[in-house]
Amino acid sequence: MVEAAVRDSRRVPMRRELLTEGRAVPEPMLLVSGWAARVRILVDGRRQFLSFLLPGDLIGLCRQDRPLAVSTVQTLTDAKVATAPDSDVADLHQAYAASNALEEAYLLAQITRLGRLNALDRICDLMLEIHERLALADLIQGRSFEVPLTQEMLADALGLTPVHINRMLQQARRDGDLEWRGSRVTLSDPAALARRIGRTPARVSADV
Amino acid sequence: MVEAAVRDSRRVPMRRELLTEGRAVPEPMLLVSGWAARVRILVDGRRQFLSFLLPGDLIGLCRQDRPLAVSTVQTLTDAKVATAPDSDVADLHQAYAASNALEEAYLLAQITRLGRLNALDRICDLMLEIHERLALADLIQGRSFEVPLTQEMLADALGLTPVHINRMLQQARRDGDLEWRGSRVTLSDPAALARRIGRTPARVSADV
DNA sequence: CGCCGCGTTGAGTTTGTTCAATTAGTGTGG
DNA sequence: CCACACTAATTGAACAAACTCAACGCGGCG
Image (cartoon, rainbow over all chains, first blue to last red):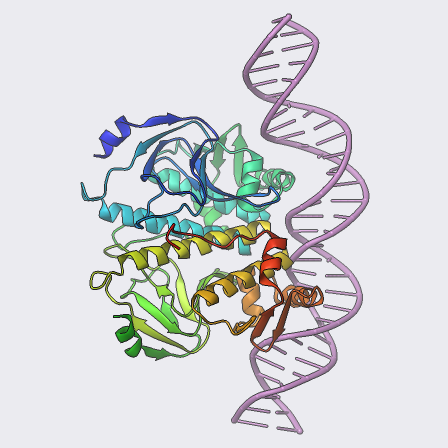
């Protein structure tokens, strides 16, 4: 099922809207490759990324009859997107439910990040989360991984200014916590960093 | 159905945990009266309220087989809680789905609040949201409503310190935007305030 | 009364922002 | 190959927002 969906995936260029806030949700989709983000734009133009969507994530899952998208979703890179296989067809109910629960857990993590962490810890915490999620999708090479984000995007995700992100990244580098060259991020010691900033990874089901 | 559930509701005192993060989710519940909150506690004791649960809200909805709670839920006031009627029994599927979608929308609103609004606007935005939700539950008296929150709780919801909340509340009062006496909040002109801070209420379905 | 939780106030400090300029990197056309 | 344009990253200095710490007021209640 899933393999078929992946085969039928279509290409979507960078910076395209997959879902638009307030408009009807089309069929659920699977992000096969590339990154996307849920984003909210304020009236004065400020932007807030609500969450990132990574390869393997589902887009627009919803059990409603006539659902409206609660947030815009746009691609951050060129991407491949497939129609999500119908949950009735295969035994995907559980998988979809777990995916939904995980997505909620990430939203909650984002709230605590913004509400209670300082700039430096926000960056580290987010990088640990991305590391963790990419690991689930088997997209880690050694201790490093691809993060196709500009410092401005990072700022919009973490509720900070690009300038401050820049300075805090240098700080993190000086502290020996992470390396960021081009779009490749390396965490020196994820476990130690997680312990230091008091991060606990998301758990959603007793099975995992 | 719902009436029966309400009749069978049980009392829960203030400051009790209805769900505990990381532990199994018992049967879904309906908050009949009183307030509760989803909360996350950091290792160093800092606290972040993720969302508020108001009368009529569902607790622990989940489509998983062996779900773990992704957040702790605790009562903020004495409350009444009932077992949520099974969605198979009546035509509650749609209602539950909509409730879920709304809950997600409120989480997203919380993220933008924390990420992109300053202290004063966070307070106003949250009060407008609570106003809006209480209105749906028909719990508004005139232009004012009950908000059983201390300034410390408000601080934990908005990612600020109690001291700063205090000063900003005075500011809002001086600006003529809201009145807060005891636990009763009065918004002078909700619509105008919403316009001024650029707030748009949540919409989740084309039906509503 | 005297304690206790909550709200209030002041002064000084920290954290993050703003504005403006500079540098580096990348791709494009001549 | 270089000039040019464009985007992203970097830097400095002044400024503003929010925090910290510590004290004080105040109402309810045993």
